Length: 126
Image (cartoon, rainbow, N blue to C red):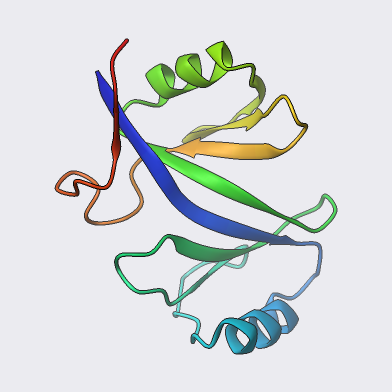
């Protein structure tokens, strides 16, 4: 048995500097960006009961993808494969998958601090 839920929306931006994305998205969403020690990621403040929103500097074309957080990446990947998703790329700490619709998303370890205590997670049997 494992748990999973929506963790974050990730705004992939093909830009050398996240500043333009920061200026637009923080104002569009009415939230400030947090300070973060990374040249490739920048979090936007969200209330603790809502998914995280990240700005991510990428080499591929700009798009938005979602992250599914889980306490068991391999079990969640297996569950999603049974639903028709495929593994697109295995990273060191997460797995990039592609839905049957062609949309890419990531399966990640828990990101939100209330993951283990929240009743707002899906519990999956094998």
